[in-house]
Amino acid sequence: MDRRIFVATLAVIALTGCSTTPSSPDQQFVDDVMRALGGRARIEGGPRFLTIEGRGVQYNLGQDMKPEARTQTFEVTDYRRVIDVAQDRQRIEQTRTPRFAYFPGPQPQRQIQSLDGQVGFNVNASGRATRLAAASELERRIEFYHHPLTLAHALTVLDTRVTNVRTAGAARQADIAIGPVRVTLTIDPAGLPLSASSPSAHANLGDVMLTTTFARYQDIDGVKLPAQLAGKVDDFTVWELEVTKQAFGTEAADLAAPADVAAAPAATAAPNVTAEKIGSGVWLLAGQSHHSALVEFADHLMLIEAPHSEARTLAVIATAKATVPNKPLTQLVITHHHFDHTAGMRAAIAEGMTMITHAGNREWVEHMAKRPHTIAPDTLARNATRLVVDTVDDEKVFKDASQAATVYHVAGNPHSETMVMVYIPRDRLLVEVDAFSPTSAVHPYAANLLENIQRRKLQVDKIVPLHGVMAPLAELVKVSTAK
Image (cartoon, rainbow, N blue to C red; front, side):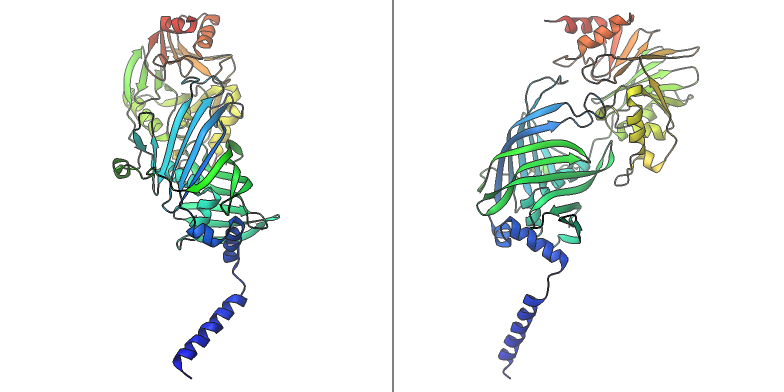
C-alpha cells in the first residue's frame, strides 16, 4: 500500500475513534460550560475586552454595630469594570457612599482597583498607584477569575487543570486550578455557571470560602453573561451588583501596571511601634494608623487594643515587654469587635492574655479563637492555648496597690453597640478609639462620647485616642457642641 494512503487511512481511523469515544468527565464539564456560554470559538477567539457597568451595594463585614449585624451598607454607583481577557488584566472603578454614620464622613469615595497578571494595585484620588500585599494580590486574582468569561477563557489555557467533577443535587461541580488560584465552579444541567468559590486566608477569620454567584444571564454578542452577581465570605454577603450595561469592544486605556508598581515588592512594611510615657505607669504604643496603650499594675501589665494586623500586635507585645521588662503581660482590653481593631487578638490569646471585652462580644471572641487558620497559620494556630474571657456589662474596675483602671461601656455609641473605653483616674486619662479622633475632619461619634463622660461624671484631662494624637477634653467638647 502507498505510504501516503496508509497514513491517511490511519488518520481517518483515529478521527473516527475520537468521535465515538466518550469524553472524560473533566472534558465533558468543560465542553458543557463552553457550549452554554456561546461556544469555544467565541470564548477562545472572541473580543479581547469586556466592559461592565452597573450599580449595587456593599455590606460592612466585620465593621457593623454588632458582630452578627448586617445592617450597615454602602451604595455603589458609577461602577465600571474593564476586563482584558487575554492579558489577565482588569480595572474596577466605582463610587462608594456610606448609608450610615461613617467615621471618615458621609461623602462619596471614588475607588480604583486594578490587576495586571500577578500584580494587584490600587490608585488613590491623586492618581498614585500602590501595590497590594501578597495576600491581597491573591484575593484580587481570585476576584478576576470569579466571572464566567474569565474562568471559561482560563479553561482554554494548557496549564489550567480541571479535576473532581461531581454532582451537587441537580447541579455539577468541578475543581479548577489556575496557578495558585483554586476555584470550585458550579454549573446548572446545561452547563451555565451558577457560582465560583475559592478558599482564601482572612487575617481575622482565618480559612474562608469566597463565593461569587451569577444570575439573570444576557446574550451579549453571542456570549451569555450574567447581569446579576453577588459575593460572599462564607455565608456573609459582602456585595451585590446589578449590571446595567455590558459590551465587548476595544479599550483605549492601558490597563498595565505602572513600571514602578510592578517593580515594587508585594509585601507589607514592617510595623513601626513607639513607646511614649503619658502617665504614671501608662504608655502610648503608637506608630502608623492604629495605636495601643499599656497600663502597668503592681504585678502585671494590661494592653489596650491589638489592632491592624498580627504582625503589628506581635511588635506591640515585644515593645510592651521591653518597656516594662520584669512584669508579665496578662490582659488585653478589646475596645470593640471591628476587624481593624482585633486583627491581632489571636496573637494576644496565644500569648496567654485574658481577653477583657463587653459581654456582648463574648460569643464572638470565643468563635474567633476557634476558627481554623490552616491556609496561612497564625501564632494561635501554631501555639494553641486556653482562652480566658473577662466580660464587662456596664463597668468593671481593675485595681491594685499601684494602679487603677476602669473599663466602661460606651452606651448608645453609633459606631459599635459593644464599645468600651478605659479610664485611668490617677492621671485623669481616657483611652478610647473611634469614638473621637482629634485629627479627623468629621466627628460623628464625639457627642456620644462626651455624653458618656458627663453621665459618669468622669474627671478627664486628656483624651488618648488610639487613632491620631492626644487632645484635651476641651477639644472633644468643642467638636461635640459645634453647629
